[in-house]
Length: 389
Ligand SMILES: Cc1cc2nc3c(=O)[nH]c(=O)nc-3n(C[C@H](O)[C@H](O)[C@H](O)COP(=O)(O)OP(=O)(O)OC[C@H]3O[C@@H](n4cnc5c(N)ncnc54)[C@H](O)[C@@H]3O)c2cc1C
Image (cartoon, rainbow, N blue to C red; front, side, top):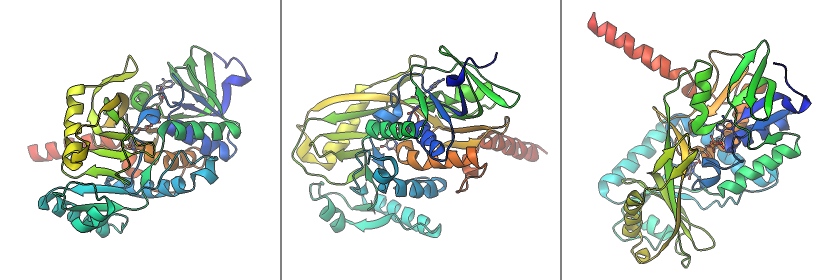
């Protein structure tokens, strides 16, 4: 079926209006591409609009670090780049050790990064930690400090990328779920309730739903959804400046200027992919609240105001897929950010624009190739058959 009109045609179709879709659209539109973004719900409805806002290079898997450092530079220049700073506060991020063994872990981590040439994570002792955050409980032993990390407002950031892309001519269609995708000749077609959209190039940034679209092209990715939870407390007098995580237990913690405290840290609730929503598991939230009270005993009577869960995509090796398709031409994927994709959004959108428009990214992306899971499978099959012989 031919496309039904000019509004349905573009140079590039982007499926998914989260931060990664909006940032990719912005970076491509900036380079003159005619971009259409198709979003099933509304822009920022899922992970990108409801996350903890952590802008964190700290604690990244080594292959992600160059991407995170590149993205961080965009964060620091966000206002000049997209006309809004997304509420970015360069508060610094701390990873707290609570025992000597955890401090040894931090020491080993910093040494590992230094052996790869990365010096952004600094080991700090107990005195420095307490100087940075005097309200912490006295049992802490030290940790890791990254000064140029921080936090931002997720929905505002995603909306700002969308608006910046729109100012450059990108068109966003909300309430437009894509069903079938198909490449015919030199064009991609995306079927939606609004009709058929078509373009020469296709970008899939559909978060937890991206695996279903990749499967249509015959590319199976071990990706599954999780409902990640957050809670927000009542307001309390300022006591904490940095964004905090812990070494021995899951935690992500920050106090906003308005006094509320946002508490998360990959807390797993319930993900309903078909229903397109996440649900809170209150019993699990309690564990996290206990961690916070251990670290900041003065918060033990602070009430929780609200809690929610967002649906996020997790891969089997905890790395995203940022890759050209290995099966079809003019198709690029960017999804599976495993609970840490907010910080990467500004930078990965740029890398996607390079993959789409130049065919070559400015940073190596082999670790994020879509076929790495087949290769792992093939390699383990080879090992098994070698052992058998
Ligand atoms: C509670 C929580 C806390 C988090 N905290 C942090 C943090 O502190 N720091 C950090 O870096 N990261 C954090 N993350 C992770 C981060 O939010 C995500 O990695 C990131 O937002 C993923 O962005 P995305 O654009 O890939 O996906 P999404 O935001 O999920 O966007 C994908 C979009 O695609 C749309 N879509 C799907 N299928 C279709 C279709 N067929 N047709 C049209 N549209 C479709 C969806 O409706 C959705 O809007 C957190 C996530 C959660 C849930």
